[in-house]
Every structure is written in structure tokens, then in C-alpha cells.
Amino acid sequence: MSISIQLESEPVLAALDQLLARSQDLAPLMDQIGLEMEARVSARFETRSDPNGRPWDGWSPRTEASYPFAGTPAATRYGGAALGKVLERYGDLLGGLSHTSDATSATIGFDVPYAAYHEFGTRHMPRRGLLTADPDAGTLGNEDRAAILDIVADYLTP
Image 1: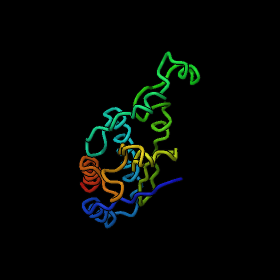
Image 2: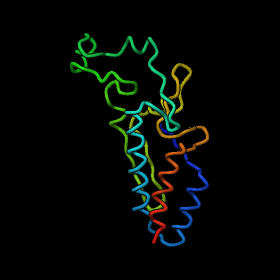
Image 3: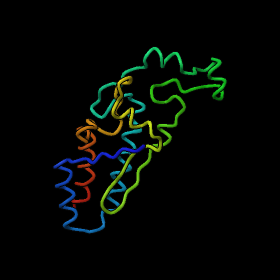
């Protein structure tokens, strides 16, 4: 399963249009945007907050009971220790974070299908946003948008 979210930010699109008028090769810019967003999403695992700065909800009691904390029999089955943090049971989600880019786009995401459940939430699990401020609207968080605009502004400066 994969999801695709296309971000439509007028300030970002206007700045990119200015760059396109000057140059056809935006691949280095797109790679820099991808790297920046990858770093920002990775940092969310440290801050335990979404792109709007709202803290992620903790575990449900049922999930907490199933986590293999270090020293428990369940942890022994999984190599002796577990990470014990929300969204980091085994490190697969963060370990699968990456970006790709080309001359016209930057794509960031995860290589595990269950990432979509965290981004959107489910009936049984609260949303723990990683990529977007609002996944239904496809909007960036204010700080993410500002970071991208700063990168684009650096490219626009002669």
C-alpha cells in the first residue's frame, strides 16, 4: 500500500516558478529540499510531535502491554531489548525514511506501508503526523514551509 500527498503551497510554488524562469535544472534544489524535509521528519521522532508542534498521543494501554521492554520475555524474542518509544518499537519506521528527487520534484516517505496509518490515524489509533500538518489537505507545517522557502530564496539570490 502506498499513499501520495501532493503539497500545494502558493508561496512555495511561486518561488519555484521564479527559479524555473531562470534555470531548467532544479535537481540540486530539489535534492536540498528533500534532505531538509528528511531531517525535519527524523527530528520529529526526537520531539515526539507533529509538523504543527503538537505532541503525539502516547500508547494505548493495550499497545503498551504488548511492547517488548528490555528484560521482558517478549524482548528476549526480539534480540534482548526494544526501543520502547512511540513509533519506534523496532526502528523500522524511522529506518525506512528516505527521499528521492529529480529536476522537478522532491519526494519523501517511508518504505513501510503502515506509515500511512500513523500519518492519517485510524479508528483505533490517533494520528501521529510525520510528513504533513494536514494529510487530507496536503499542507506543510508552518516551519517546514518556511524552511523550504529559505532554501528556495538562497537559490534565487544571485
